[in-house]
Image (tube, rainbow, N blue to C red):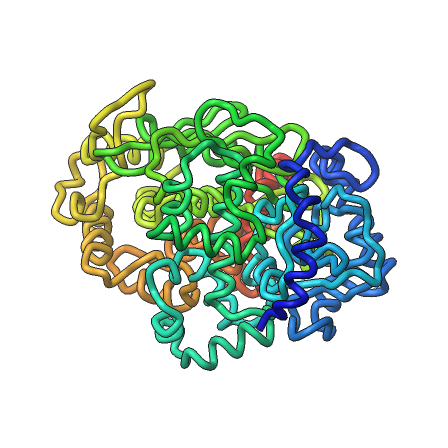
Amino acid sequence: MRDGRWHTEHMRKTKAVTICVGAHPQIKSGAGSVGKACAAPRELAVARTALLQEAGTSRDDACGDAVGNRHGNTLPAPELCDRAREARDARFDGLFFTGVTSTGIYCRPVCPAPVPKRRNIRYFASAAAAAAAGFRPCLRCRPELAPGAMAHRLGEALLDRALAMIADGALQEGSVDVLAARLGVSARQLRRLFVDTMGVAPLALHTTRRLLLAKQLLSETDLPATQIALASGFHSVRRFNAAFQEGCGLAPTQIRRARRQPVGNGLTLRLCYRPPFDFAALLGFLGKRAMPGLERVDADSYQRLAGTPEAPVRLRITADPQQPELHLQIDGADPRAIPDLVRRVRRLFDLDADLAPVHRVFASDPLLARGIAQRPGLRVPGGWDGFEIAVRAILGQQISVTGATTLAARLLRSYGTPCATSSDGFDRFFPPPEALRMAPLEGIGLPRARAASLRALAAAVADGVVDFSAGQRLDEFVARLCALPGIGPWTAHYVAMRALGHPDAFPSGDLILRQSLGGDTTLKERDCEARSQAWRPWRAYAVVHLWQLSYDLAKERT
């Protein structure tokens, strides 16, 4: 439990200081700055490697060291944390947090505040662990903006799945007992695993995330406190105020008064990532598959309808030209929907990815090393909705991307749900499973067998036989999808890669992959699968690099 006297003492020391500092300032370009990290990903990749070598270990190896109190294998070695913190290296953002005992505040590695003395530093694997130790979030670097830790980097399958489920909202309405039952373990075993590896219990982790979301909304929007309480999962303003005061050391009104930068029109949230990040490549991928009326992609933004047909929400996502963050503009959302919208956007753009361990695994493969040198910031494109991605995967079987997009547009116009209000060409939602389970889909130009596959998928999703919830085992998900008529491993792995964000999904039957890996010949599917074993557990990232390289490789063959 928190030491009350310790906390009171540090509250007395720091209250005046924390009130006077405002929202995150622009961090100027320069050595080790966030701006430089965003602008020069290749140079930063070299710098990060040098940083790891200087520490005498790789970060993956360092994660196994025993550091602090029960952070298991999730916290880098202290000397590595020291160097990343002193360099304000944005690529370590969210991988650890710094508690400063002289102020009682915890910070991100990129915090622009003066570097504290080493004897006053404690490192934590998560913001929740720092909060549980009695530290309060910094108002300058704002820990709520840190990108999430990539669940599968931890190497513990049960913990990976639990973290994915919590991030997907499993504890918003459910309990730890229900979560443990979904995972097939006891609640006691699950709590012990979290405390031993993350330094904090599951519910405390979830509560800290709720409070940090509230802090972000207080800092970046003019939403009333009542709506912020609802958005962060509290059903009572009184309970919200008490929890916020306890978790952040300040009242919500103090956070808002401390804000220095004015809030613009509408609701815009900052979503940070660890560089490098290839926003243009993601826009290119999504743009080729965009369905008019539901989404739109231009040179610098992705736009989409969200919400419900009765209460549509317009979203627009752009990249900040200076800082490693995206800007999410939300128009017309119920505050209670904000957490889900943020989760979906982070998954769509793979914002929680940590590419350093991925690149280390790929470095020994000449083809993938070439891909990394050309496009170091490639991410795995996610999907807004699992059913939508699965339908589009079936539509794309054995035809080109252009042909599949044409069929998807026809499906949307024929069976999509019209909006109650439409503007600027956004007028339709993707059809729900119930609308397709008995639909005569042959009428949009589908072969009879493929139309039957879509109807079977829609029925399975509507009946709960198949779902796209986070934290599923890859092999089990693939088996459930492949049990449906007309769906094979290629389709199932493609859906797992984009809808579940599973980093090890690998559609080994993909023709482009087999051609890219085969050189002058086309590899057989089993040979493609065998070649991919060395890239586990990051094979989905290999897929994206090989797809990106395929045009150049085809030109070289001719």
